[in-house]
Length: 342
Image (tube, rainbow, N blue to C red; front, side, top):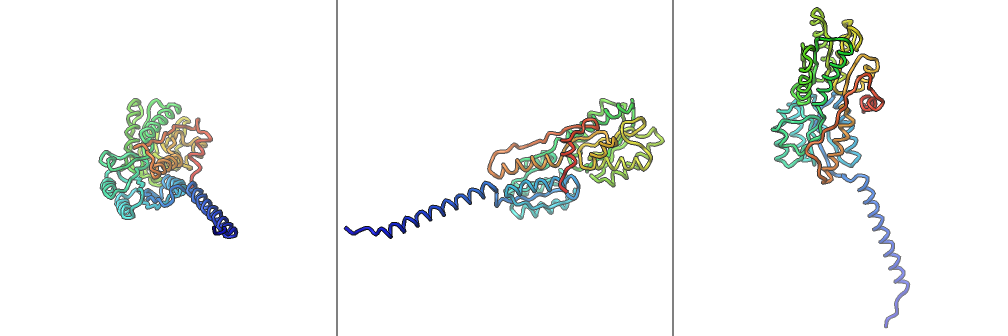
């Protein structure tokens, strides 16, 4: 029998141990990388609004959260322009991402693009506001605000504020976001439904401010001036609080006070931004509601991440909203409304 070469056997043992260490190290590195970025290689397109302040904060936050999970995000922005958004949808579809996240500029105009995405086998995620049935059937799932609640909260704030100011009747005007969106239509439906209970408060004007503070201020100047000889304006609703800020600015130019003191115009909003917090603290803006882009973006990132991991997600996820006034503004709400990505 041939004798065993102990030196060769020892060398082979050392090599085997070394190979095992290398293999285990590779597994460990792979495992660590996978746990840190479990969705590396996945890509999404975010077709959204910008440079609107709310949209910017939302876009920055949801992008941050998705990238932290290893997901590549490409943003294509329009300022509520359906034609430009259609071009962006074509660009996103051509890129064949793992999902398209869409903040529709117009509930009707977006339908053909959603249909094209579905035909191409690309999942779509509807953001912020519901779509009509014609669009919903092409959407994979959605993460949206409770816009019905936001409209109801605005009406509740106005009625409460006008009563607090001592008005047993009054003229009210509205400056809304872009009326082609169901964000606005749903809020208005609930606003008017609630106001029907209080016919002593009459809506005398309802204007589209297109989510723009300057335009909101211009419209408010016209309305406040027009109704000054007709008993004045007792209540005003700016659909976002930077729009309410525009109303307050117009009132100040005309020497009209805002708040709940005698003779003042009660102003409310229905989604909070950093500009609204100081106005509430100064008692110029009476009411508000959440719809924080921080909460909404975090909710969106959570459901999108789960979906891309292959987990089941609800068809519709609705973010819970909260109503508040000057008297109930808390530190938590200041954080949600006043501390956004810049």
